[in-house]
Length: 101
Image 1 (tube, helix red, strand yellow):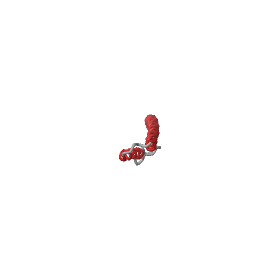
Image 2: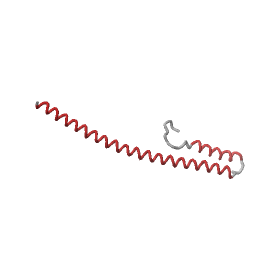
Image 3: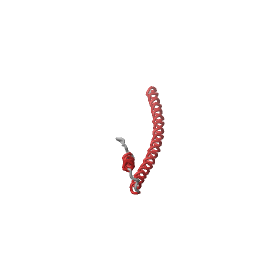
Image 4: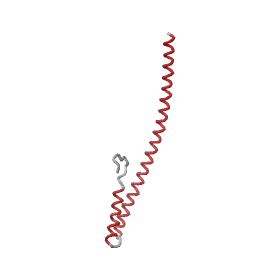
């Protein structure tokens, strides 16, 4: 997990590792896979699927928010540029009036 991970889902790698460990335990034991073990593996993999789905949803929401903020930032920059030009024009008018006095 990244240091500044703000995602709302727990890390999935440990769950994947746990599922793989179960599979390896069964394989190394030489016995056939029991239904209870298969159910445990399936449950862990489904948890991973759910967390990954949540993570994708979160990522998409963050992307949409970033896009919205980028548009807002562009609009504000345009507004600042317009206001700076307006200030420059007003300064020019003040200077012209001061010269006329």
